[in-house]
Image 1 (cartoon, rainbow, N blue to C red):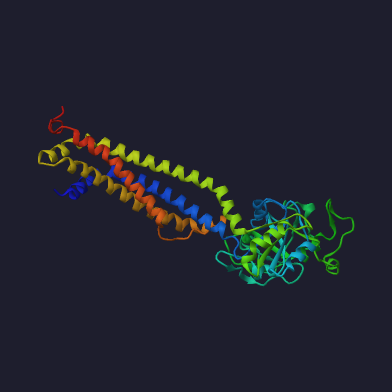
Image 2 (cartoon, rainbow, N blue to C red):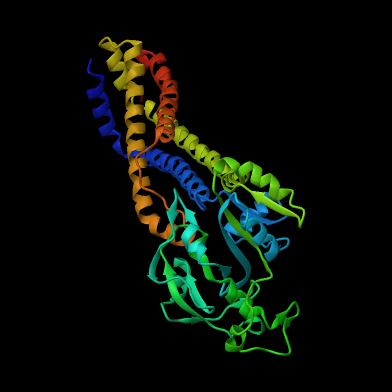
Length: 418
C-alpha cells in the first residue's frame, strides 16, 4: 500500500486548510528561530564591545556600573580618578599601555569622550579589530574632534564642520560651550559598538572648554579659545582608563594591587568577565521571549490538531474503505502521521525561508539603530534541535487523531448518513 501517494492525494484535496496550517507553523518556527538568532547575535555583539583590553580602572564602584559608563557610555562615575593616580598606575612595569577617558559632556544627545591618540592605537573590538577612519584623520589640535559613524550619519556632519559641545548630558543653551567650537577632522568606520555614538575629543580639549567653568556654571571671567590654548591643559582628573598588560598572566595580581591601592579607592575589572556577568543579568528578558515563542508554537500545533480532528468526519468513508481492503492499524495511524509530518516539515522549511527573508530586510535597520549585526549564517546545532523538537512534537500530536480514526468501526464509515 503506497501511503505516500495516498497522503499526497488527500493533502491536495484538503489543500486550503493545510496551507493555513503550514502558514501557522511557519510563523511559529520563524519566531522561535528569530528569538534564538537575536539572542546569540546580541550576546556576541555585547561580549565583543571591547577586545584585547586586560583591565578597566575607575573610582571605587560596582563592576557593572564601571563597565556601563566606561564602555557603554551609560550612567556616570561615582567619582573621578586623579591624574597623579593614573600616571602612577600607567608607569608600572607590568603595564604596556593605557588609554585615559573623560566623560561628562554631550552633543545633541551623543556622549562626548575625552581621550588621547592612544585610543585609536590600542582600543579594539570584536576579535581584535582596530578602529579605522572612514575619512579624515585623528585629532591633533586641541579643538579637533573625531566622530563615531552614527553621530556623523544621523547629524549629517562632514569633515570641516564645526560642532558645539554642551556641559553635562542635557543640551541647553546656557550650558553650551559655544565660545569654543570643535572642528570635525575625522569620522570612524561603523563598528557596531558604542564607539559609533561617541564624539571623541582630546583630554586637552575637555580641559580647555571647562577652564572658565566651575561647579555652578560659567565663571564671571571667561577666556576665549585662543587664550585657553596658552594655559596648562593637563587634566587634574579623568573618569576611567583602559589598561593593557605586558603579560596577561599578571592580570589578577595587578587587579588586586589596584583594588588595594592606598592613594584613593579604586576598582579594576576584567572586561570579558564583567560583560559575561552583565549578560547573565539581562538574559532573563530573552528567556521570556523564548518562552512566549514556545507558547506560540504550542498554539500552532494545537491548531494543527484541531484541523486534523475536524477533517476526520469528512474522511470517515476514506478510512473505512482503506480498512475494508485490508489496511492494518499501523497503516491508518501511519497515514495520519505522514500527512502531519508533511505539513510540519513544509511549515519548518517555510519558516526558515521567512526567517532569512526577514533577516535580509531587517539587518541594515537593526545595525543602524542598535549596532547589532545580524549575521546571515547557516542554522546551528541549537536551531536544528529546535526544528527537530517541532517535528517530534507534531508527530506526538498526530498520534491522537490517528488512533481515533482507527478505532472508528468500518460500518460507521461506510454507512450512509441521511
